[in-house]
Image 1 (cartoon, rainbow, N blue to C red):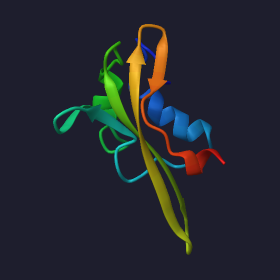
Image 2 (cartoon, rainbow, N blue to C red; image 1 turned 180 degrees about the vertical axis):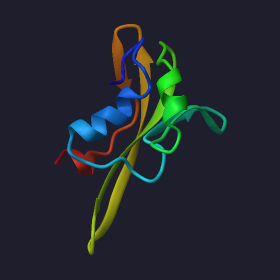
Image 3 (cartoon, rainbow, N blue to C red; image 1 turned 90 degrees about the horizontal axis):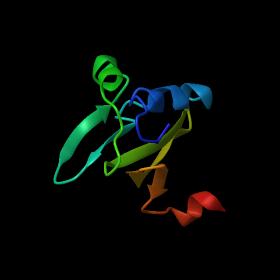
Image 4 (cartoon, rainbow, N blue to C red; image 1 turned 30 degrees about the vertical axis):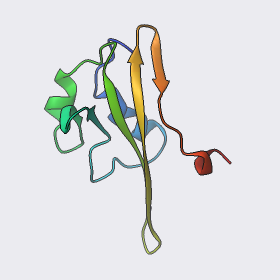
Length: 97
């Protein structure tokens, strides 16, 4: 879903495809000096549907899993949209073990 020209809403679809409900916080948002657009959230579906990912955009992409009675865990990665796909700029090594 993180590729140039993709609708930002595809990131919401990626959660559904993984069998996880969308998190209460934005799935992704622009990463810059603050809380930058695009803001991709289940609570703002029209905004996500109207935004396209463009080369040079940097997104804070959220991974979130919640289990009733257990709790939640989430992580966030900085992802650069490139001319031909994406590049993860940060890493959470403990998630890859």
